[in-house]
Image (cartoon, rainbow, N blue to C red; front, side, top):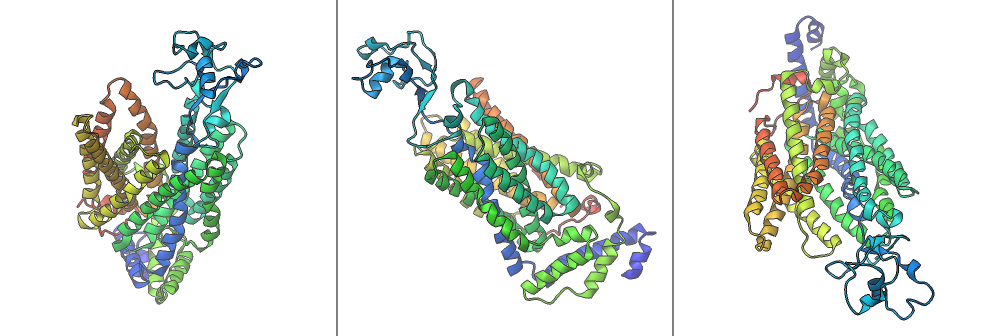
Length: 549
């Protein structure tokens, strides 16, 4: 093996052979030290816990950005004893125009009380002006929200939705930045930086004294949270053996569903938006404490020439799993591959995603699939009507529906493979949307069942794409690849609400577009190679040499 290292500088064929031998040996060494033992189980627990925080922040705007029923503050119209003998409802009748359903309008008021309306008329024909003295809010559901804090209603109502857009812009930028930093400086260090950044800016946003400051802090919170999502998945995937990668992917995804359900409970118990932000951010403090037990990826260390550190973590894993330490022979074989490999002199960036033919194809197709998965999932989630229940219970049910979908996809991932599972879930999602396009409105029970089935399938597609993508990209570019695909997916998230606005042009147009996106991305995923029980690629060269199965 040492002579192989001496000859590789002159003989590229020998270099590739020696490199392949070592990479094969890494998979073997995982089996030797138990690729799915107590060490890996503890790692899953430590990394799943902070992932529960992600949906709590990603979907937080549903609750903190809620706009409760409101009407103009009419106290300025009460000159002396004008309203003394009137009930609250009567005061509103003489002060605020009524909607067609009899409720007071939210953004208009009369310039003076119209007492004749107590006996006749809605006042719709009378001149009205915008609210002059602010608003009065119904606090029966929420003690405080962004809308009530900064009066983000009427002509400023779009600002509540803008906070969500700004947050996801931070997520997009974080995906690109952390993806590059993780492949350059390691998974573990960037994970700690993400923990600290999300915790600091998450708590700070709860104390913001202006909307502008709050929006900036939410952007930075989203930036930090992205690193948690990407790193927690990749670290677990790179530490387990081939047979358990699908289990790891699904377990990580289930933590999202748990967090999603917990969000409904937290929001129900904590009605003030500032307190709610602190509650959903607090678990990151525990995550920082547990970071000291999280190992660096041995795969990343090896392909970056950090042999001694890789040996340290592998021996630690072996000891924790009650297995013998890694043999000296394996260390020498690793040195042969790592210290003399030309790959170690390269600094990888997003440019390498499109430098070679197979990588260009992989980058293009995974981008299409991720865009389709995200756009479809959020398009359906935002467009499904509730069950006539309160918003907390409705949100909980929507989150709970995802659990059986993920358990189902776990079974199919190991039976029919990643490629067919990815394509099948997306195509079936498109079929569900298409069925609802043609189902009559009066069959709302059936439409609800089909819509829920479509949402479950779209979540199954999301679960698959995280695992599938992490297995497709090589170790030297795995974080860059996930950073790029996460960026593309957030474009899909940002576009989904805009697609739904096209309902004003044609009622069926949003569903047709979402259905088409699901079908196209599902067909595109068939062009990707299968990764079921295939060893993780380590270098770009491996991806280029890998034939499609």
